[in-house]
Length: 95
Image (cartoon, rainbow, N blue to C red):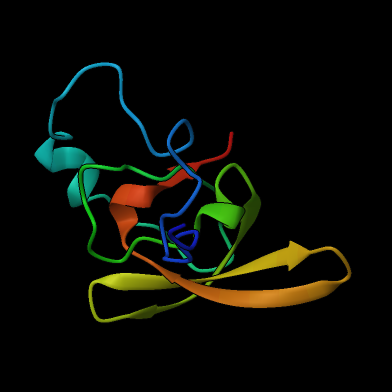
């Protein structure tokens, strides 16, 4: 018997799947955020660069800093505040 996969995208077929095979728009890739702005992590499976772990998909957080082309986002996970690095294509503004 083969052992189960334990990779980064293991057991995330539905979470990281798309119904239509299409790349996101350039505007989505180049969007800018302000510091202390509220965002939501919505993973874009077509872009692997700067992809956060699938456990953070759908979580909301606050932009803490910009590092290169990516942003450092503070997300509350259970009782701890965690900092994750995300490319802007995986982030969405919360109104």
